[in-house]
Image (cartoon, rainbow, N blue to C red):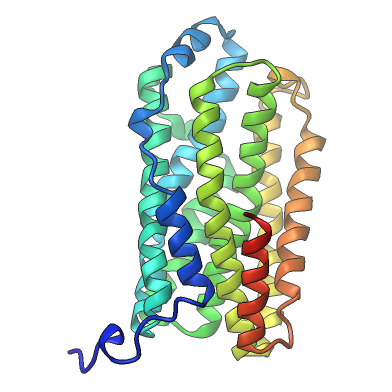
Amino acid sequence: MHTAFATTTRGLRRDIPPMRMFEKAKRYGVWNPSEIDLTQDRRDWSQLDTRQQDLILRLTSLFQAGEEAVTADILPLIMAVAREERLEEELYLTTFLFEEAKHTDFFNRFLTDVTGASADLSRFHGDSYRGLFYDALPVAMNRLIDAPTPENQLVASTTYNMVVEGMLAETGYHAYLTALERNDLLPGMRRGIRLLQQDESRHIAYGVFFISRHLAGTPDLWTKFDETMNALLPLALGVIAEMFAAYDGDAPFGLKEDDFVDFALAQYGRRYERIEKARGRSLEEIYGLTQAALDSEE
């Protein structure tokens, strides 16, 4: 039962970061995967050799299942935020879910309309990938259904926003663009990846804010954040190793495993450093830090 509604009692706080992210999502997040022209992508695909096609299929299969996973698995976090009556955050999270669904649509359209892939692409999902997307992510998120404690919320967001999105997805985008831009291939895929990156930058910004808010309220959670990041790091690096292992040190498009391990570790360090700045801060200081970060991205 409802006893009151925020918009007719206290009103909305439009000065806090989630509402700023909501405004950005309304402005930049409304793009349609069905409107991206894949005509040249089909031509390019037909000219790729077997190994090049294999790498693009492998990478796309990781993103396709990953985007489906984050679409399905975010619902318990939205429920936890709604239960706490954090309306501004819930408003933003409605766009978060829509964008993840849109990303799922985009990769599926590429697979269907460009590659014509019909075989079971889960053959590309190695042990580390399965450990993260089949196990760690859904377990962390679904734990919030019955136990939405601050600690469980922090672990869920760390898994989802800091590792899956902030580290692994960013590294995957880097792989796509490195392979395709240097060879001027698959312009539709490149366009989609650029749009995905814009959406994901807001998702990661929310994750930083969300975790920082919890640390401001419960400083002792820092140890849990640190443990979670370190526990998931081997899985994230394992996904990269599994991908390159398929090519015996000679990956198509001249991609080098060390380049992507270094990139992933740099992303890990960036996410860790941004959260570390929240230690010992008040909630209003967290608002200020997040607003400054949002300003720097515009």
